[in-house]
Amino acid sequence: IKSKKSLEVLIPKLKLEIEGFETSRKELTKLIPDLRSQCEVSSDDQEKKVELANKVQKCRSEMDICAKLADRLESELSKLQQDILDAGGSRLKNQRACCEKILSDLNAAEKMLNSSKVEITSAEKAEAKAKAAIIDLEGKLSAASESLEQKEAEFKALESGALEVMTAYEQVKKVEAEKRRAL
Image (cartoon, rainbow, N blue to C red; front, side, top):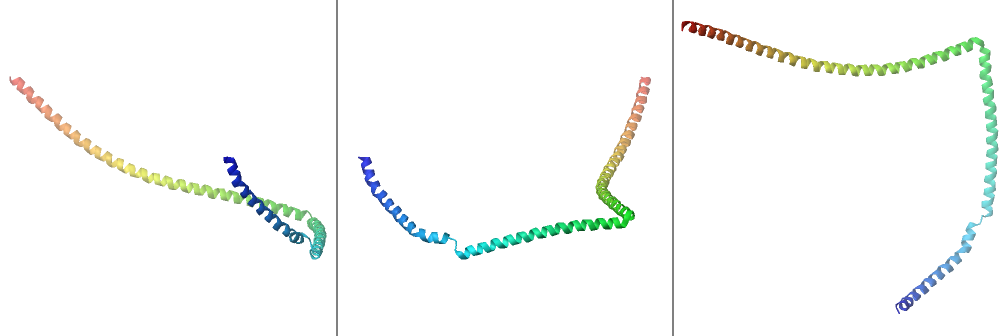
């Protein structure tokens, strides 16, 4: 009974959905001719396409010609540079080798200079740390010296006190010895 009632409710809903789908199908079918006309290439567009393809082909051929010309000019330049070197003879070659060596030496000197600058900076930092340590140690030495002087003064005071005690003890011993003799 329950399934019959649920089917009775579902059937009208499904019928409504089917009608909605049918309406949508009809509307979409009506749009097909317009869409087809929009998808077709017009003769003007076809002419533009052909014209652009021709321009692309022409540009490619011009680019190939330019590339060949550039290659030829580069080879001529290379040949001219070699001819200049050959015209200068061994003197030019020697000067060129000398310039290359000087450039190499200059690069090495710059590298050493930079390395030295780094070492100088490190040494300056180490010097600053050492100076700070010296100041700290001088302060500690000064405090230790003051403490030593104070302890020496205390020691002298104790020593003189001990001497007085010893002297008094010796006197007491003498007095005692005299009293023993007297008895």
